[in-house]
Each structure stands twice: as C-alpha cells, then as structure tokens.
Length: 384
Image (cartoon, rainbow, N blue to C red; front, top):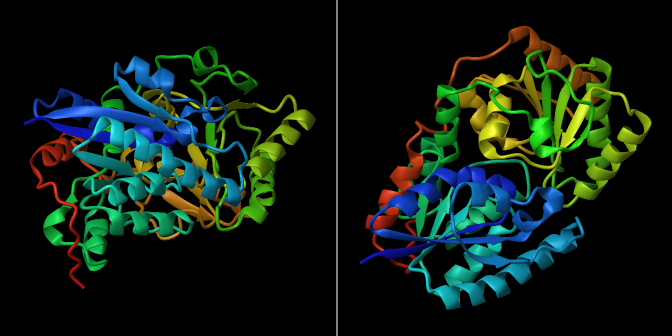
C-alpha cells in the first residue's frame, strides 16, 4: 500500500535541505509526496520558493500563509501558533500517513505539534545537533515529539539516543542538502548570470575574478545586538573593497534591525562593490559558494555544505556555537577587526580539502527508502 508522506517546508533554507528527498519520494513507487509550503517560504521579501518548486516540477499540495510580517519574538510565537492551527486543518484534509519536518527553525514547531497531537507519525530531519541559538530549544523539542529520526552526523544520532529516543528509530542518514553539493562538485562552473536572473540591487561585477559572499542572520537569543553585529560586518566588507555577493537574512527576531542597517549602508555607500540578493535557486547558490574566495556570516550553509565544497568560511558570533564543523571554518567575534583578521587568514589559505562529515550524496534516497519501510507508530517509549 502506498504511503502518503507529507513534507512541510517553512523557510527558504529548508527547501535546499530536502530537495533531493522530495525528488526521491516523488519517484518512489511505494510513496506519494504531499508537499506543504508555509510561513516565510511563501513570502517574496525573503525570496519565495514557489518558482524553484515549479522549476523542479514538484506539485504543491497546500499553502499555509501563517507568517506574521513583524520580525520580533512576539511575531515568531504567534506565527508558530497560527501555523499549528492551519496545519492541523491541512493534515485533517489530506490525511497523511506520516509527516516530515526539517531542522530547527521556530516554524517547525507548528508542524511537530500539529502532527503529534493528531497522532500522525512524525519524522524529523537534522535532529541531535548543537547550536548557540533558540533553534537549540526547537530542535530538541521536535526530537521529543518525533517518532522517526534522520540524523545528519553520527554524533547527532548518538545524541538523539542519549536524549531517550529508541535506537531502532534513530537513523544516521547524512543530510539531504549534501546530495545537491555532489551535483555541484561534478559541475562547478558558473554557467549562469545571477545579476540577470535574480536581479537584486547594487554593483555588478565579474565573477571570474575573486569575490566574497556574506550570509548573516540575527542571533535569536541576542536580538538587541542585531544592528550592532551587522554594522561590524558591513564595515569589515567595506574596508576590504572586494566584490561581494550579500544575501538577505531570514525571518527571525532581529531581522528588521539587520535589514535597516543594510539599507542605511546602501544609501551612504552607493558605489561599494556589493550586490544584495533576496534568494537564488539552491544549485546556483552552491555553485557560487564553491567558487567564492570566502563565505562570511553565521549561516549553517558554510559549516554544512561549505565543508563538503571545501569553501573557506568565517563564522561570526554565537549562532552556530557547538555545531560540528570541518577545518574550513574559522570563528570570529562580531567585531570589525576580528572579522577582518579571519577573512585575511582565510584568503591567505585558499580552498580546503573536501570533508564528508554531513553526508555522502545519497541521503535523500536513503531517507525515502526508510520512509517506505519503517514501522509507522506514534506511541513513545523513551529509554532513559
């Protein structure tokens, strides 16, 4: 009997995390994909995913518009509450056999709570990891609500078991985002023009010459410092005067402060060699990441996908504190001089050897096969 697998994508980063899994589910003869797009994944201000999904020929089963436009902790809590309400109605209508939730953003709590309270088996991807952020609480809470666990690293899988989950329900699969990285490693050429395809604002420059990338989000446990942190990064990039691709922050408390600081910077530094993008397709982003001289910021992409690509990364501040990383990552304090020193050190070093800490390129198919064969239960039996 075909199993209906409902995957809920709530943010732009989550789509690249599970793109290969979505394709594997849709191609599996024992599975039926039910794709639900919700929260900031639908908002153009953060780079709507609808075009990417359409291009990948995936059918959307339902859309859930639950994201409040404000970028603060109150809006995050209310977005989660609205998501729980709306997703409960979606699940009631489409009757999935199993729900899949991804990673650790606050919106994923809505998916987990709705599925758990409705006695629908819940699978969680990327549990058991450590970071210095509110995501830490969300990730571990979803782990306790989930029935099947797909961990990206061996250490993460072991941590899930230590949290009391039954070992037979914890699977070390690697991260599906690395599947796409292997595609890029086979074809790393910049065979597209991001300025033409994705627009954005700022200077246009030659990507055959060295360029930097910046992706910096607010630290959700330190929202009061968001503007201060991003100003230090802006000053560092300004002083380097190296062509830079800068990607808009995601929908977290503190994003409004970062956005405001970036807009103010643009108004007063019109001719800096910086181009700002909302979002680009995952395959294009990874090609740019493969070819950049250095990625600066606090995105997990530098630690996760960057490790496999061998990209030099400067990780700023505490957002990724404790996350497993390879040698390609160098930490910096959210201060101009610390950021500059780390960037110069990474530019002097150049590309790193590939590291497969987060996957071997087959995670999507591996997870799809487990979704087709794992017992579908929602009774919890913790093993403390």
